Length: 404
Image (cartoon, rainbow, N blue to C red; front, top):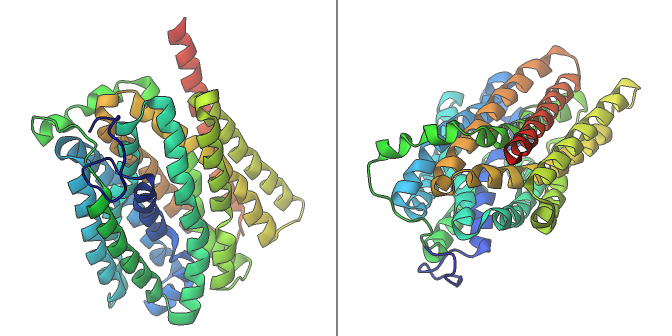
């Protein structure tokens, strides 16, 4: 669909309204974290151990990563609209499976199937790139993900209250009801924005080497992957730290857990406000440095004896702030390397981000049971953030070399 076509809300013959894109991406974000305060209680319910229960995060992210490899090319070939509608419909079936699962094995199967909702995260970005040029796309992606940040900011807190009031299944009933609403809104509002391509799906996959041969694509992908990896490690480890290290209730864990999302909200606002003015490389570098600096200060505070929940979760706000600046701009960068492969780039880049995040999430969950408090999680996140700094510095140097 041509970018100049005016947007009319609830008219599927025009590009989607930004509100629809916010809800599509927000549903995926909410499904990732609304139930996290319930993990300790779910461990008891399914009569398993926390390390296995925590796989509901790591396996979800792993399947999420694999799906993104295929969702991007499929949407480039067949369009954004049918892939999004199908993804939300499957998500609804999987959510019911999670609710009625009789044991941990069946729950984890349907939890992995829930990952299909990643279509909203992948294609929300691709739709924006379909509609706008690179710098403007970074700004618009910033606004979309700024709105999305509200959802994970309140999701764990709300999930903790639902858990204490009605049990852990209430979180998944909430996801189901919201999924029904998003499916209806997507059907009514989301017009097709991709230009349909001829050729087979296999031909689409064969275009991956064109992206993989680009060092700029790798630079942006790695910056985004390491930045998001720090956050995914937090997803995997923070519920344990909150409940077992600081002895917080599910409601308290949910309240504290939203600290990075608060920073992410403002980071995305900064991206939306300044990306066009300062450029995506400057924004990515600044965001990566902010994330790393917050974790360094947090580690120093712990080392000198200030080992409190307020210190731990409070400094995670800087991780969110930095990611809110890194991710929209790095995403726009990777989608702009080969604009005609925006969906493919979004899927491949997203797979790298989430695949690395799944590994770090599982690593955090496995290391935190050794009685070392919050130190393993802080160190994993710090190493990931410093790696993001290195990746964007490499990309900037590469751009400067090519400009000579």
